[in-house]
Length: 113
Image 1: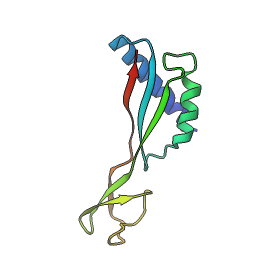
Image 2 (image 1 turned 90 degrees about the vertical axis):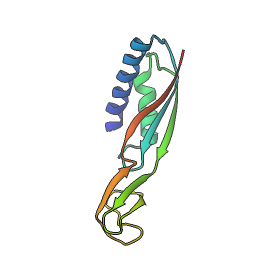
Image 3 (image 1 turned 180 degrees about the horizontal axis):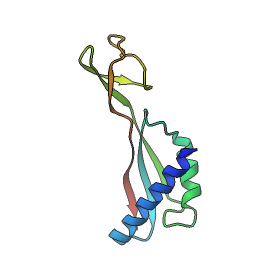
Image 4 (image 1 turned 45 degrees about the horizontal axis):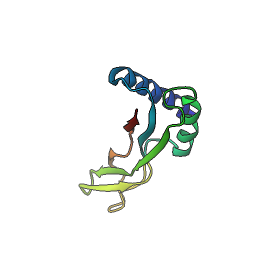
């Protein structure tokens, strides 16, 4: 489950920011998860709770902002929505798609004390 390693990395980021910005508690974390990121939101929720136990982010609310997949179709020269990698273009059926959005995972915002 790579979500556990991702949550450990997020906690490292949060702890570094706590030192840098001098906050002592995290009340909420907003995380953007792209539809094409191969990250399962429910697994992230579970892993975040486990990883943050006993930390400054213990009991923090974990909010997921889902980002839809988007790609540039090189055949019909349009930006198109995509639900999964390697899906064909919904307009022309072509497979020459360059992903432009929805493949990221990032900490968007923290609510802290």
